[in-house]
Every structure is written in structure tokens, then in C-alpha cells.
Length: 157
Image (cartoon, rainbow, N blue to C red):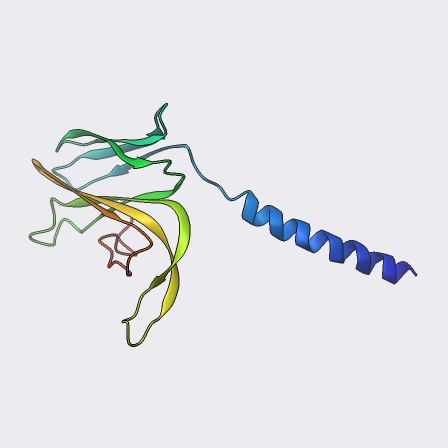
């Protein structure tokens, strides 16, 4: 009888834990990070927050610029934000850094081809690339085909 009661409790508890894990995923409303950038960029500070209308405000400060990006992304539910850069010894890239923002909910995306699909989960992503006097923005929705990343694993700073 005691074993049966434990089994019943566990069978009721497991679905509750699984539901809670999915339901209470962390969605950051405000994120601030600081990193050491390329020598010419100096210290990089990134602040991401939702404004009163639900749009993302992203403020990036470095020696290159003091940039504010807003009004592009509605209800971002920030999943993660990272800063990436290349080594100062790599010519052509030593003045470059990326701010990569993953947001929204994950969706299935085809990493393969139409003939040979390979489905994975992927978040929406915005990549901001910075060089001296030059800023570019690329927005990738997770309902499109898989996007190659400027946010190279192992290049975190």
C-alpha cells in the first residue's frame, strides 16, 4: 500500500514539474552586460530593455559609437544576449565586434536543404555588427531557414 501511494504521488508530481519547467522559462525583460572589446573599441556596454510600448530598446556604448536601436522588435522576451569578437591579431577583423540577441520563443527550423531536411530548434536572432563609424543590423526570424551565425561559438568575451 505504501509503495502504491508513493507511485501515485510521483505520477502526479512529474507532470506538474514538467509543466512548471516549460511555463516558467526565464524571459529577461532587462539585461545589461559589459565586456572588453577590441583595443580600438574599448569597453563595450550593452543594455537591453522593453519600453512602455513593448518594443526592444538596445543601447550599445563603445569608443566606436553610442548607439540606440529601438522600434524594430515587438515583445522581445529576451532569451540571451552575447558579445563576440575576433582576436586583435586577426587582420581585417581586429576592429570588429558583434552583439547577438536571441529572443522570442523557439521554433523548428530546417538546417538542411529542401531535399534533405534536418530540423532543429532555433530562437529569433538579431545580430548587430560594429566597426569604427559603421553599424549593421541583421534580423533573423526562426520561421525562416536556418541562418549561419556571426556569433561564433568560442569567441565570447
